[in-house]
Image 1 (cartoon, helix red, strand yellow):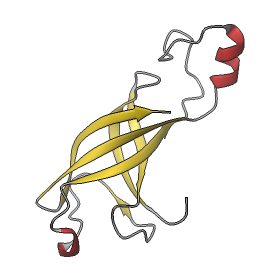
Image 2 (cartoon, helix red, strand yellow; image 1 turned 180 degrees about the vertical axis):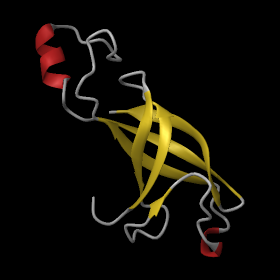
Image 3 (cartoon, helix red, strand yellow; image 1 turned 90 degrees about the vertical axis):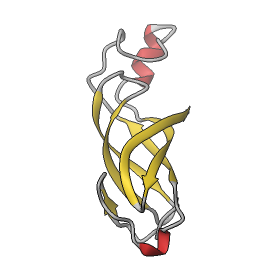
Length: 109
């Protein structure tokens, strides 16, 4: 993936259905391995940015079969998916150059 910046935020995970902190990686900022969180000002050089396209993952190793979304079709699929990262994309809202807590999940991989 190369260089990127990270935003750490609380989300409702589309895979395990739990609320937890994830690292959302983006190439829409400086790509200098900066770490951001909601409430941070992203700098005047990004004053026209209104959203960030990000990729994040769920790596809940203790997820149960009833918590998986979508549900596995077999025990073999459950065993294969359990303990692996599940990736998804999201758009994070930026308001007045400040990272907000508002996001929209746009794709699960």
